[in-house]
Amino acid sequence: MRPHLLLLGGTTEARLLAEALAARGDLDVTLSLAGRTQRPVAMPVPVRVGGFGGAEGLEAWLREHRVAALLDATHPYAARISAHAALAARRAGVPLLCLARPAWVPEAGDDWRPVADVAAACAALGAAPRRVFLALGRQEVAGFAMAPQHRYLIRSVDPITPPPPMPEVTCLTARGPFTLEDEARLLDAHGIEVIVCKNSGGTASHAKLVAARARGLPVLVLQRPAPPDAPRVTNVQAALDWLSHALNLRGV
Ligand SMILES: NC(=O)c1ccc[n+]([C@@H]2O[C@H](COP(=O)([O-])OP(=O)(O)OC[C@H]3O[C@@H](n4cnc5c(N)ncnc54)[C@H](OP(=O)(O)O)[C@@H]3O)[C@@H](O)[C@H]2O)c1
Image (cartoon, rainbow, N blue to C red; front, side, top):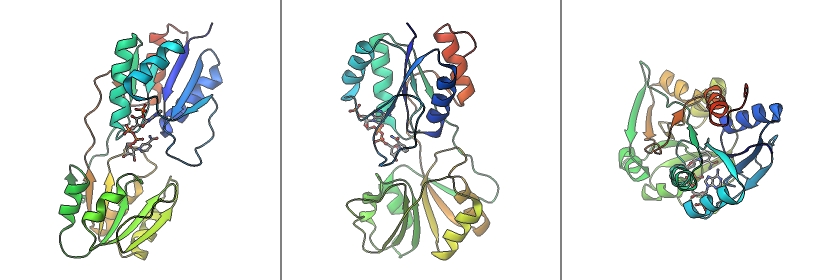
């Protein structure tokens, strides 16, 4: 019987891992998605969608499906599922690895201002109306109702429903990767004065930061949540190496 790997996904890295493992064919891989995206990218391994029902539900799933290893390749801001994974893996005695891409670091000329959360971002935007680009994903957008005086440009993969509660909003749907030219054009076309984003890391959504630097725009960066209490790697190859070791496979 081939070992069963549960891969918690929703990221480019999870897709790349799934592709590498599917090509080998010596593991049964289940990729789990939260179900946040209406049209997820096609995957080369079986996919299950939706929550497990907390850490207890995930622990039960690991036991029921005889999972030999758990790989948490969720988004760096998806802290709840990562905490559940750490707890469930410990209780079920399943080896766990987290794959989290490194955070971006500011370069000369960047004007990044760390903010703890959406409330802090609203405070940092100030009282005077500004043109704000929210490059955050859908879940945090409603919190900007606390700062209704600004004009918001909001980009998300899927349409935001219900629509954001702020009075002046332009919504765009788009899926990265975004080029520097795309981002420069977008910032200029909307007269953007400040960006609010997460420190997601990776290349797909980095260009907005380069475009902001070139324009001297401030960027309010929501801080990453604390990482889970589990071994961590920062790239796909290191995760494959760990799997090879954890499952005693040859050359995975
Ligand atoms: N999830 C993604 O694919 C994704 C992608 C990009 C960005 N983000 C960002 O991460 C932050 C939090 O997002 P989130 O609500 O998805 O994560 P979360 O707050 O960590 O998770 C909330 C719940 O969603 C379920 N869940 C999350 N990821 C799952 C997965 N891979 N498979 C099965 N169930 C999963 C779990 O439900 P149960 O407790 O019922 O198991 C979990 O408790 C947001 O800022 C979001 O923009 C997430």
